[in-house]
Length: 177
Image (cartoon, rainbow, N blue to C red; front, side, top):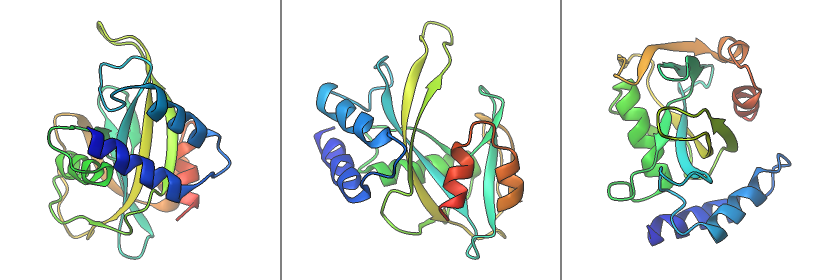
């Protein structure tokens, strides 16, 4: 966990302030929560996601998340016993959710930060996901498949994907491409 925490600190320092107000909150979480990757941490925990694009950056691979009922980029919880970096977690989650084995980071730098609330479910109260987002490149010819976590998966044009956005965070990521 210490390695993951220092990896994230380095990534955040390189990312800098993007004007969203999320960076100070990420830094506060790192400073005040012993294990910011622990999914049981109800104050919030760090997640990782991948904006999967084709080589032309004209299309993006979106998934329809089963629990949330929304079209999103692939991503999820960091597994400290398995993931060696936050980028590694984003790649693993993208592979698991899309079935595409060959995914290549466009860069190792953070593309976007977001903090969003996950509704209460079962015995887990509502909590925040501190999402670290990377751009990942895939070949559109690779066959994507749905996993148990998602209802559907599709390559969409950037404009189509932006039109699915209900809260502006996906559109912000797409505009930064």
